[in-house]
Amino acid sequence: MQPAKKIKRDKTPEQAYAALIRLCARSEKSSGDALRLMQRWGVEPSARQGVLQKLLADRFIDDNRYAEAFVRDKIRLSGWGARKIRTSLRLKGIAAAIIDEALARLDPANQSERLRTQLEKKLRLTRYKDTYDLKTKLIRYGLSLGYDYDAVLDAAGELIQTNDEPCDDF
Image (tube, rainbow, N blue to C red; front, top):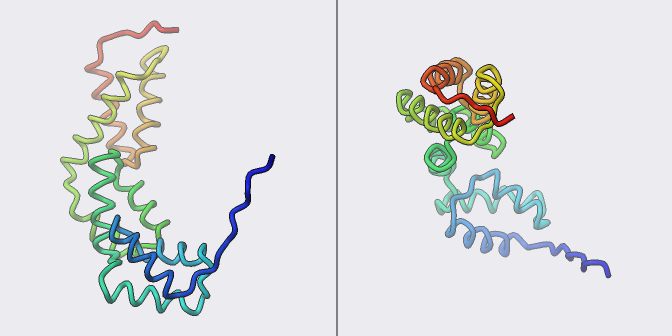
């Protein structure tokens, strides 16, 4: 038995506006999110900008507010670095000036402490053959979180120097 196919229903601009109001009341949405949703819902391209302008005027959507909340959440909850946050916001359709403004509020000292905390967690969970293998894994992990190479290299080096437990899991 095959699963039932979803029937794509086209929404009118009024229905899309009402649906987006409900979504924006639950969580922050960017203008790019709203445009993608309207495209998926089948709203006519000519009406999308009008619905978006109305949402912006009524302050249901605010890209500045969205960028600040996104940066705050990704730093505190996910431990991301500035590069990964910048890339994600760009993919969401946020303007570069808004991204720069939101990231300017980051404290560099706090960022290095968060990086060290993330690498310490990774160190406790990582199996490795030798210190070279461990350092490679820590650097790769730190870069995947979106931190700068130099900061990751320094933090990984410090952790390896303070780590005196040899691993013979292999």
